[in-house]
Image (cartoon, rainbow, N blue to C red; front, side, top):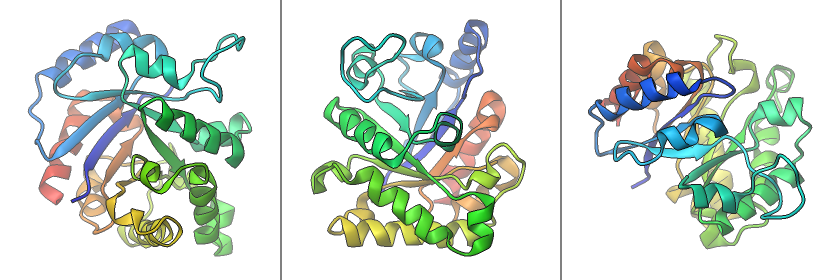
Length: 249
């Protein structure tokens, strides 16, 4: 049975006071044992969130080397040593704003697995790619390229997050049918390219997920949870989504 994951990506938000308040709210919440809850705070708030028995903690990015003279960068090994269990890799904001290529993403995924982290590989098409009709090809390319340096067993340590770029932070959301179509395709690609690994890999949906649409999205057969953006900055909303997820599967 695949792991059901609800993850909150705070992006570049969250003061120390905010993190302390969020930590208290999540520690006092009741989460279903069927759900793995993860938060991805900014680097400077990670230490505030570590050590809870209610949720795991991840970093929003890592570098392509494990150590060395790379001022300002943070390696997967350092992230793991700090106590994190997860790391986001290949988020569309980094692909678009910082020029991260599939090759860079693949190296980060490999190093994250080597450091004992669970990488969350983010993939998704732009609005132009969606409207042109080749969105499945785009997502397939990102999935295969991002995992190409892993062995068959290592692939099973990865979580994939499908986030259509046109739905991130825009208020637009893929319909349940649209999301399920791509998730099913990703699973098929994983099974074909990595010897049946797709049946064991959790595939999350991200893109303006909120309590109002969570039940419909998370009730789809191939959607194994959500990567939540803006809604994860509201503790009540995030906890509600976690509860909806437990009821939807």
